[in-house]
Image 1 (cartoon, rainbow, N blue to C red):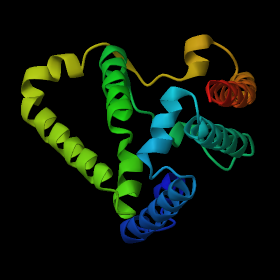
Image 2 (cartoon, rainbow, N blue to C red):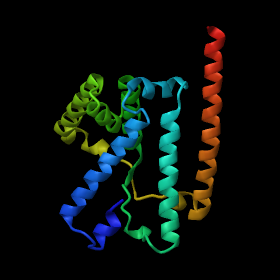
Image 3 (cartoon, helix red, strand yellow):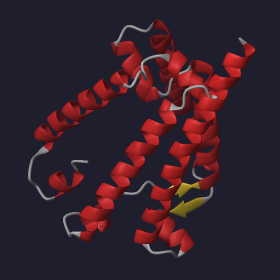
Amino acid sequence: MMAPFFKFGLFGENIGLVVAFLVGIGFGFFLERAGFNSARKLAAQFYFTDLTVFKVMFTAIVTAMLGVYWLSVLGVVDLSLVYLTPTFLVPQIVGGLVLGVGFVVGGYCPGTACVGIATGRIDAFVLFVGIFAGVWGFSELYPLVSGFYNATDMGQLTLPQVTGLPYGLLVFVVVLMALGGFYGAEWVEKKMAAGKKAEA
């Protein structure tokens, strides 16, 4: 978010830390306002009874995507300066599955766990201890798993590179996917609510 300003020397490292702190506080505040400090609300995602997490996160992704795209079109942001995490296909798939299982079992992801801790949730604190234990355990075992960790290196990939489609067209397709996803989420929530009423 602050990378272009930092890159061009508009502010230094100390101001960068202040900006990061303020952005983090704001992010946490809005997560809490959305109810993401509650494991019950987060777990409801996987029971298809409350898809707020899906809708909020998809909205954030689409908003950021549209912002970056139009800023690049207007010449405000140089996309070549935006850092992309390299793709290590198999390890990242496995890591995503592990994170997903942890999310289902614990009811939090790392970000929402921080929000839960800030609002006094003991279960969020316990999960965060588990996160730290996992990070520590991985760092200790890294020499043994480094081969797998660095396997299937595909470099920095983007969807336009993979599909050969223009950036603007892919942005449009993702927006259509988001609209369809929001409609589908509302439909699923209503069906689940109707099913609960019928059972009662």
